Amino acid sequence: MSSPPLAHACTLFGLDARDARLLHLRANAVYHLPRPNLVVRLRHAPGNAAVLERARAAIRITAWLSEHGFPTTKPAALNQPISVDGWISTAWHYVTSTNETRSRPHHLAQILRHLHRMNAPMIAPTIQLLGTLRADLAAHGHHGQADSVLTAVQRAWLLDRCSSVEAAYSELDPPLGYGLIHGDAHTGNLFADRTSWLLGDWDSIAYGPRLQDLVPTMMGHRRFGRPRTSWTSFCWAYGIDPDIENHPAAHILRAAREIRSLAAYMRSGDRPDIRAELQRRLGSLIDGTSARWRPL
Image 1 (cartoon, one colour):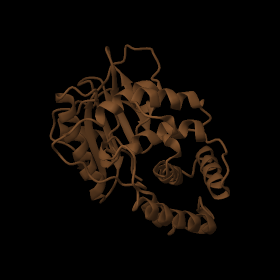
Image 2 (image 1 turned 30 degrees about the vertical axis):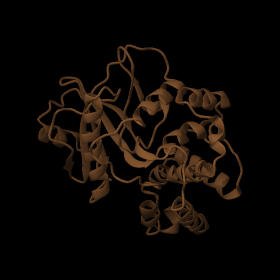
Image 3 (image 1 turned 90 degrees about the vertical axis):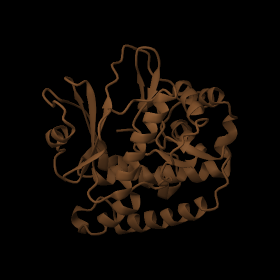
Image 4 (image 1 turned 60 degrees about the vertical axis):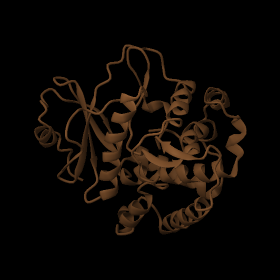
């Protein structure tokens, strides 16, 4: 994969890239540009029309949400997104945090409850249940076994699991119904400005089951060792019974997010720590155990 073309993207945007600082590097390369005080996000997605369309939707819908009082990070008033050398780039206003309070599940719940009541006039793309997992598995299938991060048995299991989850999802009857969702709603995507929490990172924006936005917090105590009280406090703030986690639709959406999470680890499997976490997660899924996962 080529290096993020920040300078080229900024030239096309007409932005001053001097003194740019890398904030985050994983699925996206995220930079702060101090002179215009903007954040530029770059995602490597050569030829991926779906990612480009979702980026367009994120810009349109968050602009509308901001205009209508929803607490979101704001897209810059530029002609965007743009495609640069196989990378899709967007620009956003930088949130200068003066709030030292850590984001909590109840902060997220209140924002999601607000979002799920919004009726944006523009249509978001349909939810991509498994993200890029199938494409990553297909690319992985072309690698030689010597440098593979998955065994043939693991890859076959994942492909079969994808099919079974997709089949179950096709018959989904979720509580909370369908509507505009963030798609990757967790407290790490909350940013504190001077007066409130803002929801950012809209790469997975979609039309889909609203329950999907509750799943990351639901998984906190099930997979990451967080106290169940974080889930219950989230539910009370959202206004729903915590036992919703036992609904059949919750099981399906949770299963989808579990396997979807493996894609990023497969793409970065040359790093020993990421490769170890991939094996931990995949092993627990295949064996049906509740081994604790570690966020990296």
